[in-house]
Image (cartoon, rainbow, N blue to C red; front, side):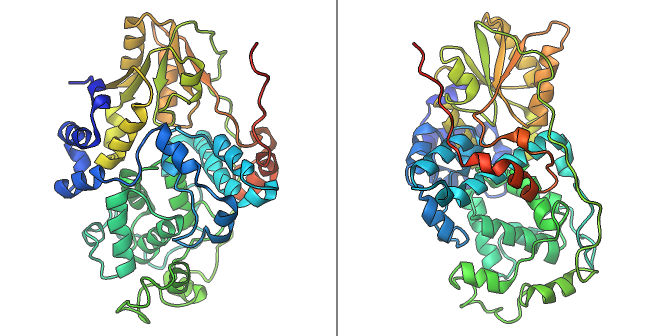
Length: 446
């Protein structure tokens, strides 16, 4: 059965069971544990849960403590990834919480990274799955693994910190950013796993799994989209976890990440420092779509992974229009989303009334449903996702074309000010100052 709209009316335990039955591959090697973890998931999809989390953010505490794993991080990323919140909305909330815009600057800069990754994804498309540039420092030993080793997946590496990160990734779908970087660095630089394999593994489990932030962050760690590779060392771990892993660790003094950064670099890399490379320049992406947008009277709102809720630009502009979300088998095969990811997605979609969920190729499903519902076109929110962009362009250019309109999100910053996406620092120097201003509200309609 390709129509899964009935799932949105189920409570969480029954929804998990239904998803497990329809998508058995989502359960992974331990199906019972995966079901239990999903039912007790810490985050609930949807707008209400997002607003409750948003109300708790403290920009000044975030600035002071964000690097510590117990710090005042927001954990808003799952709702941001699914378009239940926008970066501009979170920025506006952060500015409302402080006396001076600079007091929220650290949190807003972190939103800037998400905006930046999306811009790079829109510019590079599928190329984010290949090295953006040659490695900053060649490894002493070439990558040995094209997949994540079994002992890592089973959380039986013998390193208590690594095993803890893996267990929580699988059980909760979330890790602190430091923990993500430590795990990625150890996997790539110590264990010799290709960064693409690690990035794909994360994408399966993370509730905020987004190819832009995920794959480009792994490249940043690997040194294929950064001035230097990122190294995990014990001192950093001990500092930002208050010694939780290191003090009782039986490997203390002799673990894989023991030593200074210089000592680790000498052990792991063939050169003592980054090798000379041409300056990386990435031009900002051209406007998409590259055609005039139609004026639609009764569109079908096409909800996508980047825009699942009723507050996304397309749904908000057409609150009474029918809504459709398409589960693309190509996406399932590529990202292999865990059942917890599918659960969170469905809970977000349940917020939008009268939403249909259909499994199939969106190039076929979207125009078929639009015509069956008597719609004069399709509207969706802007997305960097190349698969969605290709599908939308194909629908608009088909033998029997259907008009497709793309609505923009409220901007976090002035993208026109950024002339180069080669490095975040250059992007944020040019575009970042505009992010410290709240969204400009137009006059209320008469």
